[in-house]
Structures are given as structure tokens and as C-alpha cells.
Length: 210
Image (cartoon, rainbow, N blue to C red):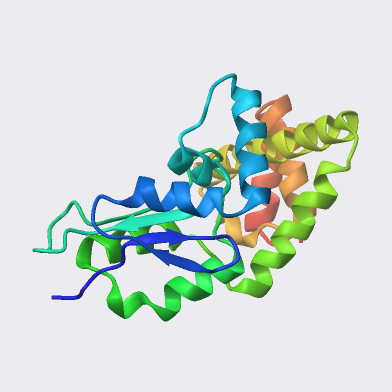
């Protein structure tokens, strides 16, 4: 049985171990010994209009908490990642520390780690994503709205294209035989009626149209 991981992991990748059921006490010690963390806890409390427990404050400051039963392994062993932001991701330092200590994780801890990180890209791509998110946040809202409209139109065009292709197949013409120009012509016929389609399909089959 693996010993498991129990303690707090800072965004900088520093681990503070904790005995079983002592996480709140360790969180209090961490914050009380760091003036910057203590100040941040007060600011978060003022924002939320309440006094934050120390362990809750660390979670809001992107710390990861993990724990396990010292006597036996079961499904109460855990690694809890911050949930205050659905887009939250481990810092590179946290991710590196977890990877380095993966062999010490209990079964349930390993499962929770894999579940949380299964959509992660490699670190280089993640850094690129972060840069892109920052750049996107600078774009004026009216430009974003226009982009969203274009994306919506693309999705609608994709749906319509499939509908048209299905219609073409119903005319016993292989879709793969159609070029872009022909697809446009077929779209026009799809909208305007059957007469042109029958002529066009006949010419296609006889090789008059390319």
C-alpha cells in the first residue's frame, strides 16, 4: 500500500505536509507565517463579506489539498483541486510536483489526479493557451460578438451542407464527384426547384458537366 499524499501544495510547487485530519491547523500556520497570504485572506473575506477559514482561503488562492487515511487505503483518499473557477488549471510548478510524486499517490488520489488533468496539453501548449486567453480578453466586446456570429454561421453552413449532400445522394449522384462549383449549383437548385436539377444531373451522368 502506498503511503499516500497528505498536505497542501502551493501554486509555487512547495509542499506542506499534514497529519491526518490536521489540514485546517496546517492551513492556519501557513497563512499566519506569511504576511502576504494573511493580507490576501483578509481581502478575499471582504470581497465575500465574511471571515474565511484558513483552509477555504488557501483554496481560493489556488492551493491544492490532499489527504489519506493513515491506517488503510479506501475511496476517501483524495486530492482536491480548487473549484472557484471552472477554467482553473494547475500551475506548471504544481503539475511538475504532482508528476514527480505520482508513485506515492493512493489509488483514489491517482484517479482524481488523472480525472483532473486528462484534458491538459503539454506545458508549451498550455502556456500558448494562457497567452491567447490574455490577448482575447483585450478584444472589444463588439468584435467578439461579430466573431461569435461568424462562428454560428459556419455551424449553420455545415448543417446545411450536410442536408444538401444528403439531398444530392437521394438523386443517385455520388457526392464525391462534386466540385465546389457543382456543389454551389446543386445548392441553387436545392433552393429553387426540381427542373434545373434534373437537367444538371442528367448532364453530369453523361459527362457533359465537370
